Every structure is written in C-alpha cells, then in structure tokens.
Image (cartoon, rainbow, N blue to C red; front, side, top):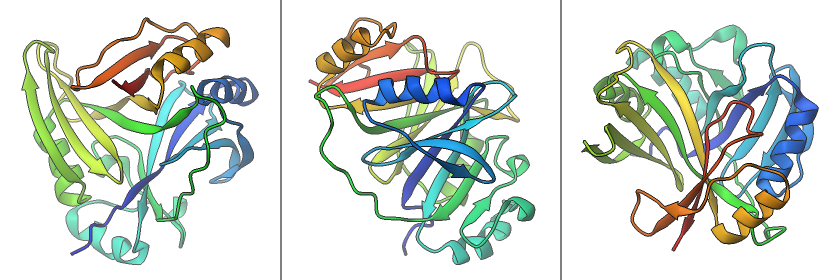
Length: 252
C-alpha cells in the first residue's frame, strides 16, 4: 500500500518584511527567489532540490509557520483524514490544497497539496544549499506526536532515540529524501498538549564553501563543528533567518 505522503512540498516562513527577508534568504540559499502568490497573499519562493522555501508576510511573530506535504492522491487523503481524527479546514482548502485544523494536529500548522515532480539543476556556487535535510518539531509528548506523524499521516518512522547527554528524545520520520525530526526535551519538558515548530537544517555539498560564502555575505555563522549524526559537520546561522533557528549540515 502506498503512503499518503510522498514528499515535503514546501516549508512556509512568516516574515514581517517580505522584501528584506527575500534578500536575506537569497543570500542564505545561494539562489534567486520567485515572486508570486500563496493562498491569497504575496510570497517569495526559493525552489531547492527537494523542497520549496516559501516566504509570506505576517504581522505576527516571525518564524516557521507551516509544513506543506505532497500527496499523490489528494482526493483519497480528503476522504481518509476525517476517519483518523484530522479535520480539514474547508474555507482554507480547495481541490489542490488541504489545510488541516491545528486543533487536530497538536497545534502545528500542516497542509497537503498534490505531489509534484521537483527538478534539480546545477548549483549556482560551491556553497549554495543543495536542499533541506530536516525540519524539526518540538514536542511535549513524543508518543502522541509519533501517533500523528506515523499513524495518521503515514510517515515512515526510522529512529526513536533517547540520549541523556543531549537531554532529549529524538524521533526521525522519513519524508521523501528528507527527515521530519521530533525533538522532545527531557529535563525541561514542554506542555504535553501542544507541539511547535523548532527549526530547519539545510544540506550543503561543501560546508567549508558554504561557511565562507555566508560569512562573506555578512551572516553571523558559528565555526564548523562535528555533527551529532555520524559522518556530518554542521554550523549554525545566527542571524538574518527571520525567526527560524537554522543549521547547515554537510558530510565529511
């Protein structure tokens, strides 16, 4: 049986100043943005190899606002979701887009759209981002979040790991060629009823080149360090991400 979700179509980031954020994210990703419309409002999108980063203007707090999953059978998903306890917001949905009621998705804003082919071209520079590696959701109750992502939305759980040295339980769900990660802090737990978006980790084919290019473009970037995942090296982007905690990940 095929899974309901085949890809992460896009990550939606709400920003207070769309033109300024578009400049910053063009510099961060190393690629140009495309002006357009998203759900009735202005947007700027950056198409990467495995997902789209979409900026939308908001008067609320900046940050990661929505994950939009690609679905091969949107009609089948519309029929199935209410049967597993997930409500569709009809006045925010249409034949090509299903907005899910956050009250039934542990307070995180999720949506489904028709799956599409994503074409990847040559990177414009050695340090340009090559795609998204993982999107992180912070959870107060990993078991309930796992039931949502794996049981109801049919993402493939690959790992459930508790590490006291990291003070966290981490769960990894495969979505296309990237990961939706659930982060559950141990010593300072979140409230069990609600989850929230935590951050994004982007891939690079050459982390030294990415670090150099971002520094030259005026970003405050940490030193490159060994990542938690074996065989990886990472650095943190400390500014100009408009409320989104941001990590860059490369391979050894």
